[in-house]
Length: 511
Image (tube, rainbow, N blue to C red):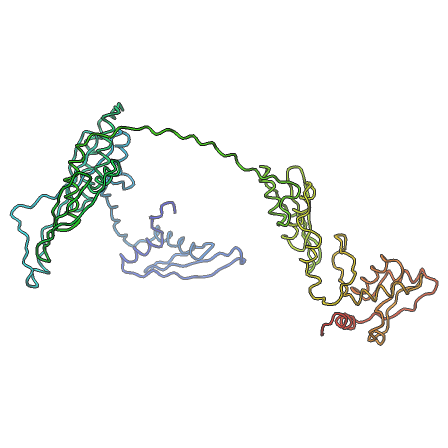
């Protein structure tokens, strides 16, 4: 709805039913259509009349049938109440004080409010008889009325009200009626007079005690307040306070310490204002040299040990260039061996990185971009090996494994040290031209036997080993056997359970 205060058709139907003393009843008749775009049919009964309508939701269908009932119903409709008139005729409920502040700012004349003491009511005597429950609980004094004086430039207005704020609003309303039609005066301030007027206006909003302390601070004069006398019964005490400001002193009396202190400050303030003005001393202007902004020197070794993504972003910020832009190019691989390809662009340079998830792919792309821009690697090779955690589970002597390269195809099973040593031993013992074949299950149970024999060529041996581990058969081995001098008799592939038992025994696991 455009207007949030506007009533919905269902609310209007409820008012109509309440006015005619009937009960509206909504009933869901049916729903049709697929799950993503259903249509609901709702029936409304109001007295003896019924209506039906449809909508994409039950709520919309109810609103539609209610709107239909409002137009077609023959029941007498209730009389609409007129809208409440706004107490303040100002648009947006702007109070008179706020409107006057805006007008005073345009005129260049600040609006200053001064509270006035309430006038005593004639023929009214306060009841000091506190005996009896009637006088204490049920005898209420006359309501208090507050008075405020408003000064706008040379014009003065008086307001009254039950509260201080109501009195301010009353005075502001009178000022608005008088000043709205007057032209805005031209500004022609004079240094001497305008300065005094502004000081008076500022002082009007400060208490007398604050003004005494300000004057004493400007003239380096000590200030001290001291209660010198206290008299009267406990319920009607009277205090006398003496204030000393340098050579000046005065006394004030009141029914509280705060009031007596204020009266004493008012008396001594009149004496302090008679003092000659202080000479104006112009303070020399201090000129500060702006410090040049520190520029980060992003050398080739800058940020080593940091995350490559953060390092690349900081280098671009130091160069005051656009931040790197990362784009996911593709996702490939098997469901459990997924690979993401991320591309990073810095200016005209483009680099890519791959990884098992988007975060690592983005990190590798940033590292590739840093190397492409001429920066050193973020982490050394030893740190990378430590982070992989491959050697954490191996407590024996370190085996001389070949370093894994980025060109290794995905999905290869990393062999344990025992398997790798057996493969190396069998590689040196094998005779050129021999083919690869499986051993029998009985031979597999012997710890000294090798799981397979490998041909001299390293590439073909790795391929044959991968095919045998993954599929149970090796087309490459069969092809080599066909090319060899002596054909190898066909052997039945070893069952996956046997392969798993062998690998678990080598790795030290239990299946």
